[in-house]
Image 1 (cartoon, helix red, strand yellow):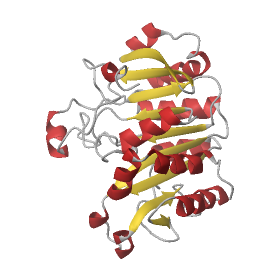
Image 2 (tube, rainbow, N blue to C red; image 1 turned 120 degrees about the vertical axis):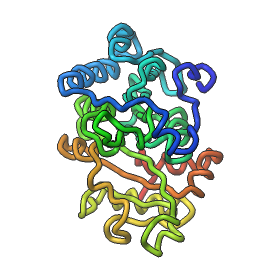
Image 3 (spheres, rainbow, N blue to C red; image 1 turned 135 degrees about the vertical axis):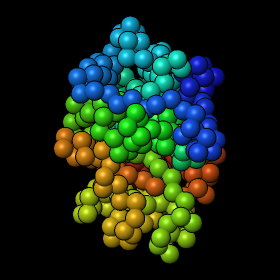
Length: 284
């Protein structure tokens, strides 16, 4: 997958120091409401038709390169923002046919080291429905000097991706993978923490408690639950979390330490346990 997908940008690593990216990157351009609705329709159609054909012209009109590729779990649609029209629309993988009703996102894949690699590997090795990635740094800015952070913006293509998934898979789960730096956190508990689990609300559901229990059992390091065990990194202003909850789905926000991200990136057994928890395939 990696070699074939290079032209679509699915194998690129971190882009370097964020200060340089903020200066040099193109402007983030919001997706207007009417265009988001059209994009939702295209994403929905892609989940239905990625195994039989895609409307390449429509994706090109939206500024994406598109390709179909066989993976171990069926045919996959690869979408990547065209290199000559980078505006922060992102990159996407959509799996057609049978899959678990779980969507992965790495909205800071170029800023939170290894999160993009982890999400891509999880998608390729397991039966996730799709995966979404940013194409500009969270520190890119729009014409009003507001940051192009896909976790916060409600006017992005990533929002359309999540909304389309919820329309096609009611009751589905969207999991966002992020990374934190324990040295920059205000609480002493972060010195030993490796995972922070949140659903973006002040009252975790039984499902979120089950995720936390599974991760605590199967992965090394300490797992913290927001807001019971930490008051930080709760994702309460996460734009995707809001639309998922409004649609009746589940939103899971996971913050991983750098140490754990490094281990998961290189250890398929460890990342497999992680995937088992996310897919609900481990007995409680």
